[in-house]
Amino acid sequence: MDHLKKICVVGASGLVGSSIVRCALEKGYNVNGTLRDVNIADKTKYLYNLVNGNKLKLYSAHMENELDFLDPFEGVDAVFIACLIPVYKGQDGTLAKELSYDRGYKEIIMPTVEGCLNILKVAKNKGIKNIVICSSTSSTNPLQPVKFKNEVDHWSDEEIQCREKKYTSATKTVMEKAAIKFCTENKIRLSIILPTGIYGDAVLPEHLNHNPFAWLKQAIDGGYPRHSETPNDSASMIHVRDLANMFLTVYENRNCSGRYYGVYKSIHWQDIYAECKRLIPQMKIPKPIKGDAIAPTGFDFSRRDSLGIKIRNFSTILKETIDWISSEPFGSN
Image (cartoon, rainbow, N blue to C red; front, side):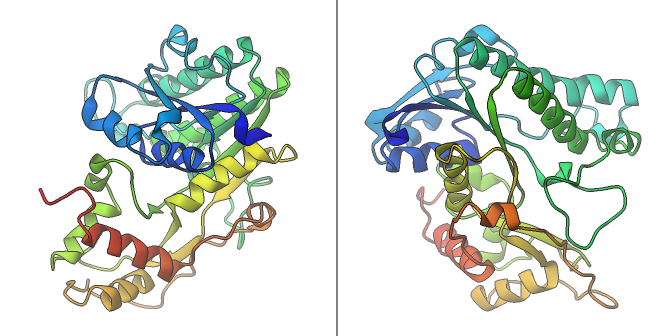
């Protein structure tokens, strides 16, 4: 049975990776996890203190160095790659949007692509045949907008993304295509989860410094949320526990492969803030939009729904996240 097998989560201290670790341990898996420095106790103690933390072993690993993954991948049946976080600056700190095409490709895109391929090469050499990668919905924006986009037919155009200096988004598109090519050639079963807007209860305190947790904390403290003026736009979201469950489900179901949206749905910001105001009366409400609200991003969730996972709805996602932040889960600072 899969739940008796060992898995490895690369990027175990990240928001997604740590929740995959949490979910896997709760299900009884033995888990190896990698992070850049295993000696940082402020990270590792929260992972080892998870339920069944005695089934977890952590390693230091950098995706630039294939040798770092030899020990973490020993005896594992699947590798979950959750370390490919967005990069927004070049090597000298220049913002991605200010880089030339050549620098953007070399400094933003290629380190992630090469790092992912390094991990895949070690997995191949270890005989690992199951890979799950965390990517982003930014790779699924077709050139001509559609009413409902899907994961099979719709891809972003990386060349256009680069010409528009959207190197961070292009990274996901290029990386996914490279990973699919590698895994196809080497007969490795690959699933790619495409999330955005991750809410819920995080594992490490440092996650609270990032959105949406940071702007929800501002709202709870009586300030403005993410915006002082409501954008005429939508935002997608999912609860981090539902997302983690999706990762394990595509691994456990041997018929699963390919791309899956890791999203509940997309909600207009005016509806997000209306619900926030209901749940957080003290919040400052942003100025309303001007004109008619645009339609939220439309998704075809056929593949996601085929997994049979019960996903929390919008109101539940927000309430659980707000209640969790309000509880001061890591103590007051």
